[in-house]
Length: 149
Image: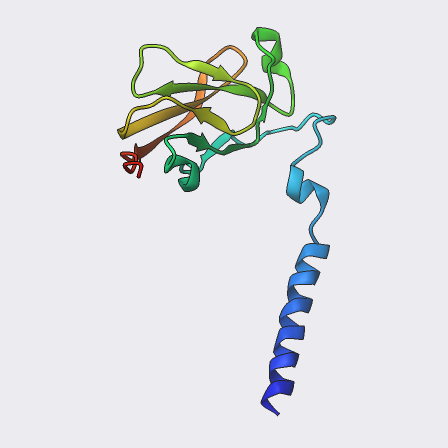
């Protein structure tokens, strides 16, 4: 009897998850179509994950990010401010350096060559004229490498 109840519970849960996945549209996953202007666009938002732990253990910093209500593309200048859906790029500053680099790929940001110890990376979401819209800082520590045997 318990086995039958367990099977029914698994089937019910599977049906619930399947119906949620079926009910999801491409717009739910990808956002609005880049081919249609959006009136009254909500504010752009930057979402940053902590560095991938597996890579950090090897002294490599892989930081994934995404944006809401803004597409990251390599388009710059005043004329691009009128594009809808909104476009922009990232400014990335490592450890309060007096300079930053620009990322317009939308892909994982990779930083290598940092010494062991604490570090931080500032991500600034910017419009095509480099005006900062949103920013987030990620703090992490590069571990001291284990001695080789």
